[in-house]
Amino acid sequence: MNFVQPIRDPKKIHDIGEFLRKASERNYMFFFLGINTGLRIKDILNLKVKDVSGHYLSLREFKTKKQKRQRITPDLHRELKKYCAGMKADEFLFQSRKGTNKPIVRETAYRILREAAEAHGLDEIGCHTLRKTFGYHFYNQTKDIALLQKLLNHTSQAETLRYIGVDQDAMDNAMKKFKIS
Picture 1 (cartoon, rainbow, N blue to C red):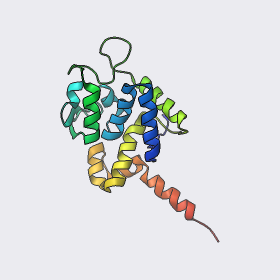
Picture 2: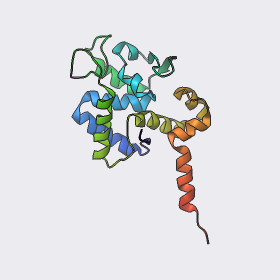
Picture 3: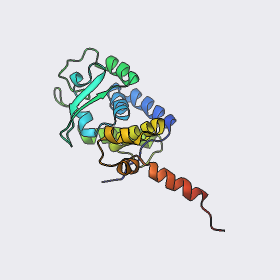
């Protein structure tokens, strides 16, 4: 498994969103939902319209089997309302073009993200990038590592900091300044 990074630059996030929106509304919403919820890829792909109706998303996490209820951000709520208009409650949010009411598979999600990353000169991007991007920006806005740990369902704050790359940023910045006389 490759090690992936969050997308740290807000301008890159915006540019990737626009790139994906030009390709397909589905691909844009997949990206936008991922970076605004911090859900794991398996959970994103299995979401149905009924799971995101209203101001909360509700699901049983695939990995932990725990029930999750999370408030949807106002921006995501607005985008989901437009995206889901005309869809039935039992439809998958991110449908494959193969078959009736089947979600895209992880490999398709990975290809969508890799295409966008390559078009924007980014390396170390994969399906977990969405979750890490959410975590990185949530932490930088709130500085609340305990709450982020709970949102990501991690066992320790140290694990969460390592996961979102904050430790790596601190080490990189320290090494930029380090000098032996």
